[in-house]
Image (cartoon, rainbow, N blue to C red; front, top):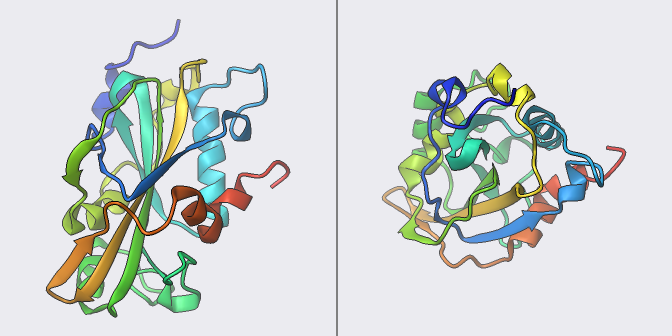
Length: 211
């Protein structure tokens, strides 16, 4: 028997802001990249595909529940170039020392001292529920916390919950412009389309078959 949405699974996951805060840009990920044509895998299997792509592109992330029994993955905030390419080496993520233990307090302090420029957070949302535009933009504090404040994995019940035909996978891109330590502004609408962000982050190629 398929578990009903709103059951114990959602109780084990914190909630993603809903409707999602206004993204800089968004795009739908082709269903065929996470589920074979004509198949109906479990939501856990779809999550495995998304996690694999995030790991290949070196993102840390955490899980959230969304209405309708779906889920969201929030990826770690990163520094990007003007054209949306992820910064290389230790300059990409915060804190910049890739070998340092990743903790929330260090993450917040690092952003305060990080260089001016553009930053990006990508959220992958799997849902069968339509959602409208939330006029409120994602604020800096929430963007910093989402990638580390969620769950480390989906509850077991998602292994028997099907990725039905009405489910969609959305990439929501949240872009920020840091002018100085006291001025970090969300960029809405974004400077670049979501597909450009997905391509230049490496995620688009990470979803390709055979990867």
